[in-house]
Length: 122
Image 1 (spheres, rainbow, N blue to C red):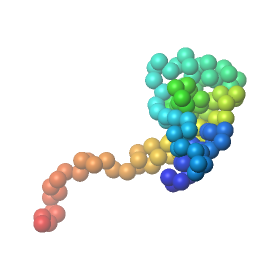
Image 2 (image 1 turned 90 degrees about the horizontal axis):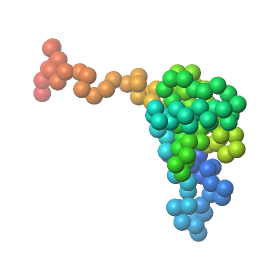
Image 3 (image 1 turned 180 degrees about the horizontal axis):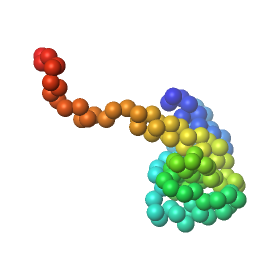
Image 4 (image 1 turned 30 degrees about the vertical axis):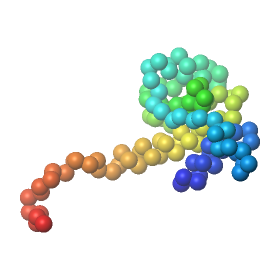
């Protein structure tokens, strides 16, 4: 899985780092929840992509401080800048959504009490 993520991040670069190049030449990619302050940017991004703005909660892919793509968590709709190489950013957003949904199905720590009646104690 980690190798797959590294491959996706490498696709952001016009030329991926080779053994002779330092690894610091990669673009910084941040996947995070959209904030209220992002609404005007998401509206502009949707307009640029010729589609309706996202509604409800969303994740955004921020590359070098700019939102390149966003994915709606309720409907899985994507808006992305058509003038940038956003395919890898959208793939990273989808990977993160799958991770969040998988975690939502697991019981959280601290849900069960420490002592359960009928259970033998060590």
